[in-house]
Length: 636
Image (cartoon, rainbow, N blue to C red):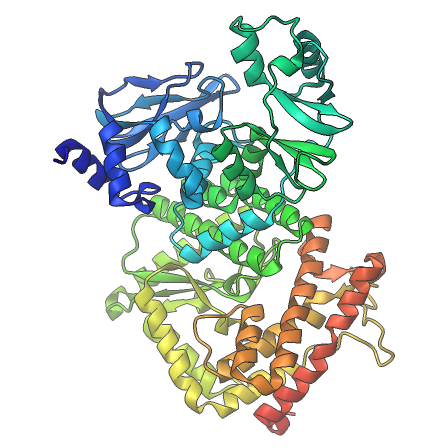
């Protein structure tokens, strides 16, 4: 016979992560072990310095504030409400609570025993990911105390982040403390104290035979079970859990939980029979989580002002730098950067609406250019346009005035974040802040009369992505553009001709075409001479095949390779060339704190110079495809 309370709890848990990934039977068994707590307003669940409890909590109703002390002030770091979990420290740490949890409303909590839930973590990496990232955000242990929550709306983003966790190797201590089995506990403890390390590896000829940690000293020495004069071999944990040098963050997380350990020994071949290389600690995992994009996105959602958004974007730059160093594919980094950039734009709009008041009608904010293509890794231009619903003529001025004011404030916030607003193509410009019917008319003019004297066609407007607002408005823009593509020969010819007008990257003698004067004299303009020609080519070819819902240059070329097999090799080479150019530009931008547009070729490594030159090869082939496909004698 079922326990009705356990069934009720199981039904509640099934609606929320990470419990939604468990079976009905598992949730029922968890429900049987849950202790239901009624917490009065202002009552403390636990406070900083309290000993760890053997349970964690999910809020059934009410609101809890999680705070920590920094610079002698109490700072709010999380606000778990119905369906959210907190108090995860017993899973991942051994020392006392580092935060205080207090009820801000009368609340009902479900206290779930750690021992009951641990088996589900060890067998389910998605549950593990969720708990670790929640812990790093609200525990006060992460390097930046960043807010988190791994509840991104985009499943694709979740999968990409998860994939990166398996790609990304960890930073760890490559000079661990090594001691002999015949040393006393007192000597080893003193060495650990002197070296400020929380562990010591016991070895024979640099082969690991055991490990001693702070936990061992507390549980076996401080309790009186062993004397400090005992040999360290008496209290060490053995055998040591060993891993190879390229162990990823996710793999290390799972091994620690499965084996209930706080340290992993890194060896030359990953076994306990080879030489010691280093040691991975729990703190290394927490540090790695601090700049995780999932953590940063939730932190963005809670940022109170532009200054905080700027700090978060700088943290993401660290993530990009580390990812490049660890050779994570640039396509993955681009995807995550797109999500972070979108989150920053959304938050800038939300903060503006909070100050300005609710908009009079529905609207949509579109990113265009590199932001719209999800190719913006370094701080560069913010390009955008805004579309609002049609209104009666007598309300048109006041409506437009509101959205111009909103766009101006959003642009100002994003300027503080680090995105340059000195561009003509931005939503605060009245020309690019218009009603739905005005935008439909604008796209029709661009596509019907390209190249006419009175028509200026900024091609980056065809690399748009909805960043905020009404999906219905986006669908209207899509219908306008893609319905026109069936009979716009002149439009494609214009786009193709514009693509071929880009300045040549190489001279007649196959040398890099560098700037001859001005502020960037002797530098190579990698943006205009290498990246944009590929962007333009992918755009015109992608639109000609009515490739919808994808404006990313790399992915456009990949899709073109499948659509036109006879040119597949050229398109695939172009996709890889784009990644080479983007990677070089990003590295230069991060190194010089710039947008990376101008690079000193002679300062590149010999390898990068060769990659850059070789990547230019498919561009000539693309030119021929475009000339033939769109019969460009009309414009040439």
